[in-house]
Structure formats: C-alpha cells, structure tokens
Amino acid sequence: MRTLRHVPLPAGPALVLVLVLALAAAGCGRAEEQGAGAVLPDPVGRWAVESLTTGGRTLHAPATARLDFGEKEVRGNYGCNGFSAAVSFAGTSAVTVTPAGSTAMACADMEFETAFAKLFTGRLTIDRGPDRLTLKTADGSTIAMTSEPVVPDAPLTAVEWTVQSLISGGSVSSLPAGAAGTARFTIAADLSVSGTLGCNRFGAQVTRDGDRLTFGPLTTTRMACDGPAGEVEAKLTELFASGPLLSRIEGRLLTLTAADGNGLIAEAPSDAE
Image (cartoon, rainbow, N blue to C red; front, side, top):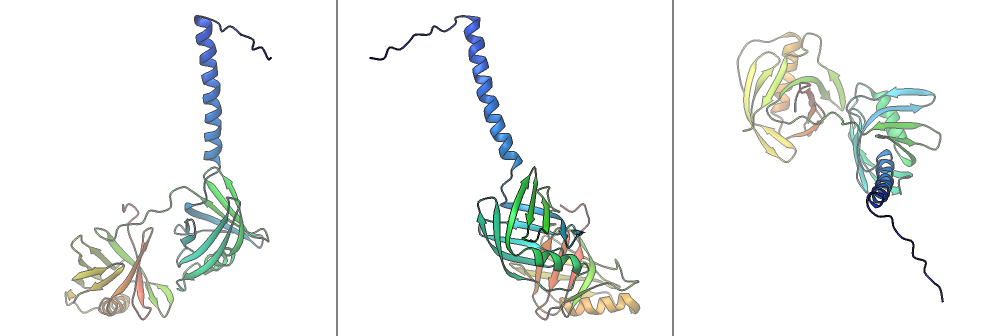
C-alpha cells in the first residue's frame, strides 16, 4: 500500500509569500498567452491595404483600398472599383479567394487596381504579425495590410460633397480645368438637397430607397453659364434628372451612378464624421 508523505506548509508571513509567488506565476503565464494572441490577429475583419509587391516592384495603395473579410465572403475596394469574392479559410494559414464580381470603371490609378485584382485570387498564404496581415501568392507576390483604421465612411447627409470626377461610358475623368471645385451639394437630414451645379445654385428633394437616390425636379437660378463650368452644369443637370442613382460611399468618396452608367464621384471634407 502506497503511503502519502505529509509535507508541512510554512506558517505566517512565509505562507503568504508562497501564495503570492504562486499567483504571480499563474498570472504571468496567462499574460503571455494573451500577449501571444494579440500578436497574431484573426484574419476575419477590416484591413487597410498598404501596398503590393509584384514583379520586383512595390505599388503603394490609395487610401480607399481595403478588404473586409467575413467567414465566407470578402468585400473590398481596389482603390476605386468595389468588389466581392467568396473565401475559404484553411485555419489562419491560408485562404482561397474566388472572385464574384466588381464594378468596372476606368479609374485614375488603373495600374494598382489591375495588379490588386490579379493578385487577390486563388490560394493565398497568410502571414500574421502585430496589427498586420500579409497575403502571399504562389510566385511570392504580396498584399500588405494593416488593421489600423481605414478612412471611415462619411455620412450621406449633413456633409458638403464636392464633385471631383464625372463617369461616362464606364470611364472616369476629372472635371475640366476651370471647373474644379465649382460643383458642390449638401443633402440634409430631411433629404432636401442644395448646392451649386458649377455655375447656378440649385435645390431639390431626394427620395431614398435603400442605396438608390432619386432627385426630384431641380429649382435653379438662371444665370447664363458657358465654358467648363457650364459644361459640368449641363452634365450634372442631366444626371440628376435621369432617374434613380445608385449611391456608394467608401471613405470620403460618394459615387452616384445612373442606369446608363453615367455618374459622378464627389468627395467629403477630411474632417467629415
């Protein structure tokens, strides 16, 4: 029969010291586990894209480039065009991406957009670091991201939107010289809108159905407008009267697109919340 040996515990202050040291050791172990967990973030979540490396080159991302990973789907922005894809994770070490669709505007930085779309497909290995995530393709190209907050989406209302570009036939062009900053509008909480079309001031009432905005008849001042500002005014007047416009806000950029593909891209001030 096995005999258990009795080991006496120290008494008084010595016992207190033993207990304190034991608790401290246990707490230290938990802290190390929590620290290790913080160092290796879960890929599911929102990530701001910083850069791509491919073909021996580094391409720096525009501020709006992002990935929003869900368990089975990812939505994101190549920098101008939005996209979605199905994803299948192999734990936290790899992910397989199956593109589902994207907008197809001709944007200012098409080199980055094209490279991003080419890399973000198929099986990608995942390298995790403190507040960072790097996706790597089979040929060693990478998509570097950070969990630092991406540019927050501006609210639709109570913000002055300044028209920066016009969309026509699937391509995006900046406003012509002499018209930059002349077209601005604000949508109030009651969905009344006011602003300038580039030359004349205008007002209207907007109706909202999900992400579609329909502008009612415009009331405008009647100054004779010519030159670049007049050209912008004519295009915006036609756009606002064309029926429901699909709205999309990403960061500080608002895109309004008509059924025929024409539209505008407007920007909110940097302090918009």
